[in-house]
Image (tube, rainbow, N blue to C red; front, side):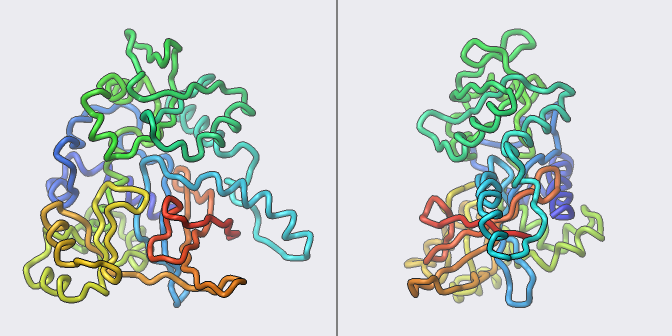
Length: 363
């Protein structure tokens, strides 16, 4: 996790100067990282991230994607803490707790990250989401921050205002926010978010992962960079050697040669297509279950999507006899593993938004 975190931060930091990265990482027309040039706090930093991985028969893992925007699943550590005494009471020996099992951790990491970046502990935190957007884990943040003595304002990011060097949210001065804004929503609302963008870019408002870290680090095409040996010179060789075996073959579909595209068209069962900045399982086409793979490949070429080798999920039988696929989700703060969980479902896509159920994992 630490090595993978350093690789992603390297991509984020190198992007503004590296023409190759600007060619391989694709963006919606309404959204480009260059507009965030000059970001003061967190430029190149990824404070919090989540890896969605598939355990492999040989005991290894395959990383399917990186969530570096507003990763859900951070509260599963609390579920692990609640189960721990029940399991140990039955005589089961468990590994030591991960940081995410600590009381109020889901709020503490945000407060500590803000204090580390700004030098000041926030006494007010804004939880920002577009009106009607998902509130995933907001209730946990509300409770945890309240226990830490931090007041919370829940608002739409379009309500952020600038008054000189102060940031106001619903009329109150705020220096720290947790922003749950999907990148597709960000692109759609970008014309209305100028005060928010200026506040984060200037450092007046701390938001997890800043602007570059969220936009670049969350792009699924980062895996195309990590998978392709042509970009190896960007990275620490030791980190790359440690991680490379866990990266499935991944490319920007539009950058593949004609022979590779023909192979991908002919063998849908071997590949998955992913729109670079989607979430919650949207924009993912699993070749095995695609009804029109040819059209999906055409869309991927036009949209510069990620194409990735298909990695089958492990399968287990539930007590009622149903076959369930499962994955391993790993979340980290500043590169330190903090939360482990598994999602289980009957289909190929295990997202909680599509009915997958989260379970704690003890590592």
